[in-house]
Every structure is written in C-alpha cells, then in structure tokens.
Image 1 (cartoon, rainbow, N blue to C red):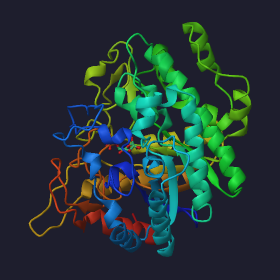
Image 2 (image 1 turned 120 degrees about the horizontal axis):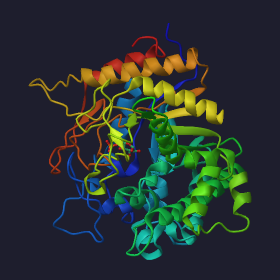
Image 3 (image 1 turned 135 degrees about the vertical axis):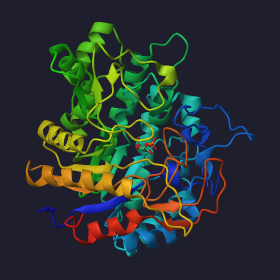
Image 4 (image 1 turned 90 degrees about the vertical axis):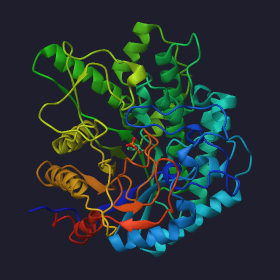
Length: 480
Ligand code: BG6
C-alpha cells in the first residue's frame, strides 16, 4: 500500500525566466538568460553579449505567465496543487543588480502572485535565483568571480525576504548550484554564476573561485533569512544524478565515486558548514589559489541549510575503458567524462536515462549522508507531445514516468524511512527548456500553444496527465 505523509507537499515547479516572459516590462533589466539563443537536441544554445534584434531569444516571451498567472493558478487549483515552486526574477527586483533601491513594480508583481497562490490554497516555494542574475552584474563585474556580487546577492535576498516574510516559508538559495561543476559547457558557469572563462584562465580554478563566492552568498543569505523570520525553512537546491560504475572493476567503482564528489561538493559545504577534504586536497594538488578569506569559515559554519531541495531526472554510468574524456563542443546534454549507455534502461528523446529506481537510490544516499529533510523540487519527462484532432493530448508516457518515480518515492519513505517533504514535478505547465531553449521539449501537464519559432496563441489546455495527477493528489498518492 502506497502511503505518503499527511501534509505532503504535492506541487509543481517552474522558474521565472522559463515561464514569465515580459523580459523588459515594468522596469525589469536583462538577465543572463535573456542573451541565450534557442538551441535543439543537437545544437547547444549560444550566449550573446548583446541583444541582437534579428535573433529569437525564447526566454523573452517564454509562455507569458506574467500576463496569464491568474488563469494558470486557477488550473493549478483545479489540479489540487498544494505547493507551487517558482523563482523570483532577480533582474525584476534589481534590474542592473547594483542599485541602492529595488524596483517597486517588480516587487509588486510577486506580492500579487504570492497573494493569488495563497488565496487559492497553494503554498509558494521560492528559489531566490534560478539562472536569473542581472546581465549587468555578469558583464560589468564578472559575475560571481567577483566577491562584490556576493553583497549584491545578499542585499537582493534581504529585500525579498523582508517583503514576503509573511507569505513565503520555503526558500532555496541557488537553483542547481552544482551544475557549474561541469565547466566544460559554458552555459552552466554563465547561468549559475554569470561567469565566462577568459583566455589564459584555468577554467577549473575560475569555477572554484565562483563556487566559493556562491557558497558564501548562500550561507549569508541563510543567516540573513533566519534573522528576518526564524520560521523560514531555507534549503539548498542541487541537481542529483546517481553515477553507477559500469561493472565491479574497482577502478570503475572509484571513478564513479570521484564523479559523485562533483555532485556532493556544494551540499557537503552547505549542510556541514565546511569544505570537504577531497576538495581541499584537489586545490592543494593543483596549486589553486581560491580566495578563501579569514572569517569565511565562520560564515559557512553559521549559514547551513535546513533541507535539501533537489532535482532528479536521470542516472549516469561510467566506464574507464569504454568511455571517453569529455568532448565539450558536443556536450549539449550535460554528459560526464567516461559516460557510457546503461543497457538496462531507456532514454528520453534528449538522451536522458529514465531510471525511477535511481530516484530511490538518490533519496537514500542524500538522507544517509546528510540526515536532513529532502524535497524533490524537480522531476519529469521532457517529451514531444502530439495534439489529436479533437485537441486532446494523450501523454501516457509522461504518466508512466511519473507513476514509476512516485512509486519509488513511496518505497523510500515507507521502506527506507527517508524524510521527504514534498514533490513538485518540473514544468507543471509547458515552458522553455533550459538546456535546449526549445518549447518542443515539453514537461507540462498543462499544454501551452507556443512553438520553437515563437508562434502560437499562448492558449492553455489540459493533457491527459492533468486528470491523472489530480487523482494522485486527491488520494494523497494512493491512486497511481
Ligand atoms: C533543471 C533546471 O536543470 O532541469 C530547469 O533546474 C530545467 O531549469 C530542467 O528546465 C529540465 O532541463 P531542460 O533542459 O530539459 O529544460
């Protein structure tokens, strides 16, 4: 029998830059996401330095949630959502990032959004930034390479905490903070930290410098949040991908173990409050000069998180003999060095391995390593959807994916004793894909009429998964 805790937060997740549109309305400044071109399953997105009027930037209009949020919230209510995870668009609040005063119109939008959610019985779960740094901070300050950006972020965090302290309880600091460990693909350092690697710089050292500033910013934001409202629950947000050795050859087991260090680096610091030894040894071995100043240890120790929010989409397999070092030019999907295919499972059309048991493995590993409540704040299947002649969308593949993942969650809770706060599947409503910039890679249970060239009416309609998830929530996960 499938059982979930009484107050389990069944929800849905999105991010401001992939959903809102209105990229230059009501005082919003351009962000690091606003200069990303469209890509595809084969073609990486390009990062432009300025906005070219001839280029289509999918995030500029996204799915126009900015003007549709009231009708969307009615659909979320009908679905029965208990929680809605979104982010506040940093560049809406501080358009350039270094202003002394915030943009009131930006703050007002989130007041209205959170009020509307609460009035409809939906708890807002908020990420402070989900790849939404003001472009100016990236271009004029070098993003999180520069320690000054830590102060700008903390000021932004303080501003929104104070404004929404009675409306939002669950916060996360940086979305998928550990993405940037893959510095072979420029999009991750750019979107996480506003950083580009310059000629002559060591990309790994640059990444760890920015990473140090990010963990400081996160820790300071946690401490600040607790001062403003001690009842806040403030989490990290990581992308977790379990990495399996291809066989029991100990060198492959060790290879997988080391690859996992790259996944654990951020939460190790954010949960324990200090750097893990494998990272310090790496700095020492490579002669990296990471700007860790006196007093930083204290900041990290004080600003530890309350829970671990994480995304789970896939697992990876590594094999030293059969895999290859990374070919960064072709790395559209965030592949890792020595990765090989897993013959036991299927992949999505974008090559993401579909592995529900991997979710239970993840829940167990994170729980055992950190002993903190977990929150699955992203999970889902990016797929091509087809509209039948009567307008219906039969996305049984999405239902199957979610059913299998929810079953594994239930085992982790009931069999393994993992403490899980909730489940907010990704892209509850169709939105712009992060890695490919496509609309065609759809996750939603609500369809949005918009295509990869920017055509469409933005009309919303329900896929089959809508009614299915409604039933799941109404039965608290018993009817799958
Ligand atoms: C995570 C991000 O990487 O996965 C989301 O937090 C993203 O922003 C999601 O959209 C799915 O990835 P994609 O590339 O399929 O949109």
